[in-house]
Length: 386
Image 1 (cartoon, rainbow, N blue to C red):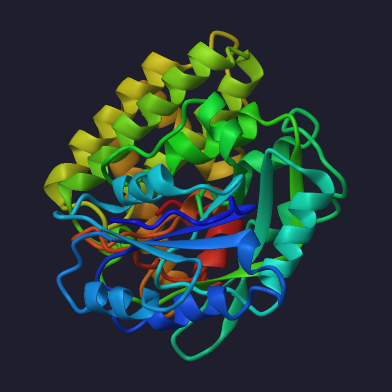
Image 2: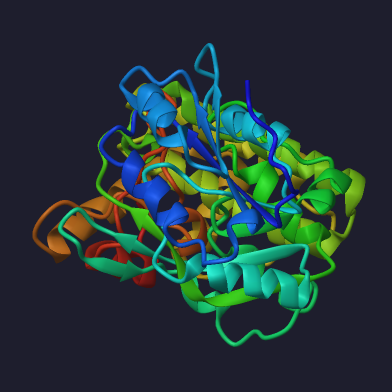
C-alpha cells in the first residue's frame, strides 16, 4: 500500500531499487537532504523495491517510516529496471517526473535549481548535465556534455539537433508528466530500455530546456554491467530500436530525423558487435547479420549522413552484410591498436553519444559502464575499429 500525498507536488523522483544495499542510503539522502526549506510539499520521493534479494526492502521500510514525502512500492517479483520505473510512475502524482538510479546520487543544490527552472520555463523536457564518478573519487566530464553548452531559454530539437546525440538515458531528463502521457511513452522490458523512451521525448517536445550545471553523479566501476557482460540479452537492442523506429514512423515521419536516428542505431550496433565484453564469439556473426537486416529495413529512401573514416567503412560493410570483410577489418585494427600502445586495445568504437551508455547488471540491477579512458578516447578520435 502506498500513501497518497496531501498535496500534488511539482516533482516526483522515482528511484528503482535492486541489489544496491551499499549505495541506497547515499542516493536517498542526496535527494531528501537537498530539498530546500519550505519546499517539502514540492517534491515526492518514490522508491520501488524491485524484489531486491538483499536488504534493500527493509532499508526502504525503515527509511520511509516517519519521513513525509517518501513513498515505497514493493514489487512481489523482479521485473527489471524499465518496468520498475513504470511501477513508480503509476503512483507518481507530481507534474514532473525524474527517474534517478539507486546507485547514483545528486550534488548539493540540485533540487533547488531544478525546481526553479521548471517553474520559470515550464518545459516539456529539462535536460541535465552529469559527471562520471569513479571508485577512487575521480570525477570525469562525460563526452556528450559539451553538446549541452550555450543554450538558454527553451528550444526544440529541430533548432538544436545535436541534443539527439546527448547520452540517451532517462536519468538526465526531467519530464512533464502530461507530455509523457500525450506521447504514450512507458518503459519496455529488456536491456537497452532507454532507447525507445529517451529519443521520443526530445523528438516530440515543443519546449526543451537545458540546465547547464552538474545535477547528477553517475557512479562508475560496479561489477556486472551489461556493457561488460557476455550475454545473448544484448540482442534486446533490436527490439528496442524497432519500437523506436515504429514510434517515429507513426508520430513523426520526417526523413531527416529518420536518417539521423538510423545513423545512431547502426553506430550503436557496431559498438555492441565489436565489443568482446558483450557478445560471445559464437554470437557475433548472428548479431552482425541482425544489424544488417535492420540496415535494409530502416535505410531512409534518401540515404543518410555516413560517418567519416573507419566508422563510415563499418557502416558500409553492415549495409552489404559483409561479415567476412568486417571481421577481417576489425581484427586488423585490433592488432594495429595493440602494436601502437602497451596494454589491451580499446574494446569498442563509435560515437561517444552511443558508446557511453549506462550498464545494467545481468540480474537487472542498475550498474555502471567504465569511463571513457584516454586509450578509448584516442581510439574514438582515430576512428579505429573495435
